[in-house]
Image (tube, rainbow, N blue to C red):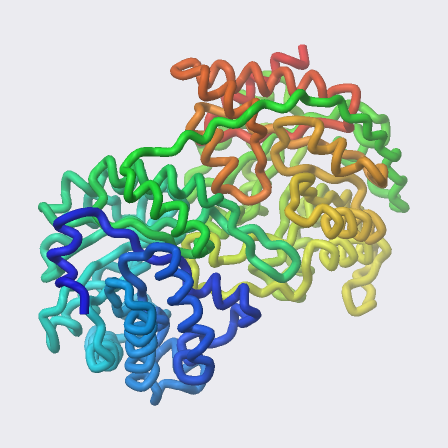
Length: 615
């Protein structure tokens, strides 16, 4: 038995473990399986993961019981096994500790119930408290050293979990909340509000974990620390945001990147650091070194000399329809350089800021705008009404992004037919980010089809039939595009999907943000693109922005040379970011079909200035 938990982290910062689910997933356990029941059915797998984290240097390990409450287990027909699964989870962790002889703590992990409390949902406070009590009793009987109630968004639900634990034990409790990229919880609470609420509870530590990566949680930490009331603060970020590679979710933050932020967090005042989704023993091993040294690592790399890419795009095929072609269609057919700018729908129902931004872009010569559709699994105004409102207010041609995540096969077809009736005919077909990347991790993803299937549906409608072959009457006249990630972890598979999208009916593709055209050259070094390429450009605002995109956002690679340039720029980061984007746009012009500009932080004026490069 190690020294008391509270005594230890008062002496020095402690390092936790990383993800349990990610490690189980890597061992072949399906994402929709019940991870918690493995404590009973496959104990050696769970113990092996605990052992890896202890070997990597963790000061504490969390039990494999995050979802072991009656509601989440009930989905798998295991609601009667709450006590057994939690007890076994605690004992497995303790047995590994004793076998390895390391002085580590075992923390009983308790997550949200997976159902909303009344009045938003149907679970009463009494039912929630009883569910948490069942779980806490099993963990306590199994012999945990402390409890961690983590990844909560609803502070009322978190309070009920703490009350249930306090009804049976005085062991330490740490409460940890999940935040979005916007530095608020799912219910809109700020870090300051969260810290003030949590410090009033009978807990011994508070903090944040999951949902987002190191950069965002560092900001959250800075806001929570002054309001923590002297309680130790815990920070456990994800390894960036996940990217879908085939049927797998891959997190991109490197061990070195997370280790650097761990050192910064400790320097700022965090007492407990670790990792959440996507982190592995390699991440914890790297973090162990900096926790011991308490100094940040240097992340500068040597810049590579960029080479010029030569990718020739095939002309866009002619669509067999009597409908007048869209502006986007005409530009592709004439091989005229295409410029489009992305607009994110608002979080609320007020469209005015977006419209003003679109008008500014129109004044700078933009004729086509992209309307995003719930990127990163976040809730915003639905894409079709946003597209209509922007077009009516500005007269701009619309390229509407459309994802398969939120709609079943009937809903997809109903929505695109409605878009066509409203003369929204440019569609960028996308599979969509899974909900677990965003604010609604318990939401259900549909994915009846992926992007390739959606393109086939749209092509079929252009030929007058729906997905089952039934007539839709007069054929539609959609101009269909596809997405491309030239820096994909599996470039061979990404190329296969691009070819499949083109064969299915895509007429052009738009890339993820590119900062060095050598990336495209490497991607197309063996096969030329079958359709025109519109290259994504996202202007950088600062060195921190560049590091965040490179290390935490799937599909974006910022080369060492560019990140080094941004670091050297210091306070001139935005100016250098604009100049870098302008230089890239000049390179793209004449070599690719067009450029797809993406504003960050709603800064339309930055994109407008980048457009000066085309004058």
